[in-house]
Length: 231
Image 1: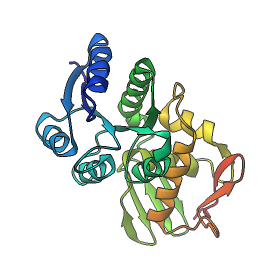
Image 2 (image 1 turned 30 degrees about the horizontal axis):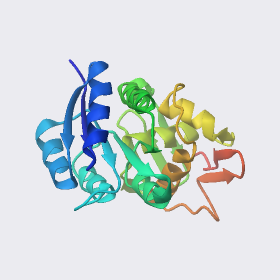
Image 3 (image 1 turned 120 degrees about the vertical axis):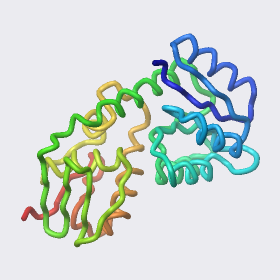
């Protein structure tokens, strides 16, 4: 069955170009001109992935993403101009899977879409028998559940996989590229800073501090390492 992609952008020309490239690759495509229309189509059509422009009239891409995340974990790739980098990072913190800056190559966008969809399909590869226990933190890989100091923690699918990748190598420094390969896939070729934003979100949910971390430490210029104390 063809994968469904919802393309949301107020520029008709961009929607038409992206649709043409996606349909030539066998995707089924729907278009939305603004945020309200996007939310309605996403609710009724159930796309496999959403390509979402950040700057739009009405609810912008960030707000649309926030609303989507209240009911769905559908993968989202943001389209943004370089001057909107801060907005992009905010968007990633509420659950975007990737972003691409305008002007962009439609072929690159299609490649990113395929990578994100392959990554989602490969998520069950985690060993379901694992339970990773640390002081104040329990990760049940099979149930895909996390408890921190006895309270349940809600993470996105991508954030959960990233936390597991770190927790399975306690004390070992993992570069951003290594984490991208483990979680996003070997063929990911986007901006490595996507890792930083998702680490920030995980820390927030776990109540961990970047300045005085107890679970995820930063190795400046390299990447991250898990520093939780095993039980």
